[in-house]
Image 1 (tube, rainbow, N blue to C red):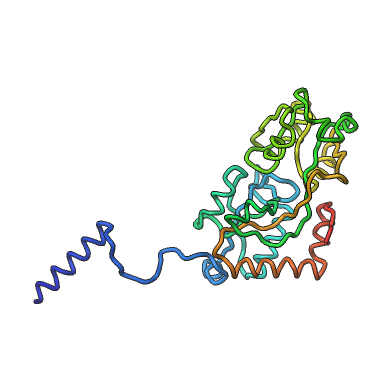
Image 2: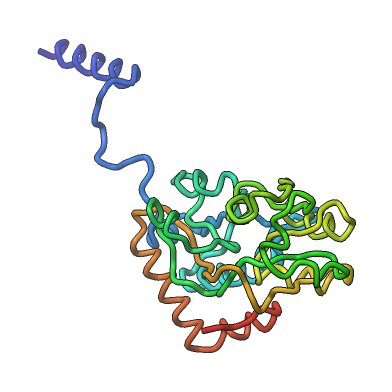
Length: 271
C-alpha cells in the first residue's frame, strides 16, 4: 500500500507536468482586475496612446506623460490609493489591447464613447464633450467651410491610422485623397508645411495646434460635424472599477475640479 501511494503520487505529478487536467488549487493564476486586486498589486495600469495633445502625450526624449485625460487618470488613481503605471497602446491596436486582460486595467486619452465600442467593452460616463472638426492652413480657412468643400479629389485629407478620424474621413469624404499618416501628433505640422490640405481632428485637439502654430487655423470649431463625449474604456467584468470611476467623474463635475481642468488645458466645458 505504501508503494502504491508513492506510484500514484508520481503518476499525478507526471500528468500535471505534462499539462494534463489536474486541479491543485482553486485559485486562478490570474484574476480579473478589481479595486482589491489593483490595490494588492500596488499600481494602476493605464493604457494610453500618448499622441493626442493636449489630452495625452508622451515626451519623446524623457518618456514622461502629460495631458488633460492623464490628470483625470491621476485623480482616479488617487481615489483608489495607488500610483499609475502607463502602458503604451495605439489607435489600431486599442480594442485588442483593452481586451487583453493582462495588459492594463483601462485605457484613457481622447477615446470617444461609441455604441460600437460599448457592444464589446465598457465605457465610463463622459468627462469631456467632443466633436469632429478640421485643421487647415490659415490661408485656406475660408476655402474649407463644409464637407462638400473638402470632398474633392484635389483635396488631400490626412488622418491617423485605425481610429475614428480615419473612419469619418473615409465615410464622409469618399472623393477626397485620403493620406494615412502614422503619427497623429505630427499631422498638424504636415498640414502647415503643405504636405496635406486638411486634418480631420477633434474640437479638443484643434485649438491646441492652432495656438502652437500660427500657420494653422481651425475654422469650424463652433460647428463640429459630430457631437460626442470622451470616456474611459475598459473590458467587461470590472463592475466595481467602473462604478468607482463613474463616481469620481461625478465628483469632479460637482466640486468644480473638472471645470478647472478644462480651463487649464484650454478646453470648452459643457457640463
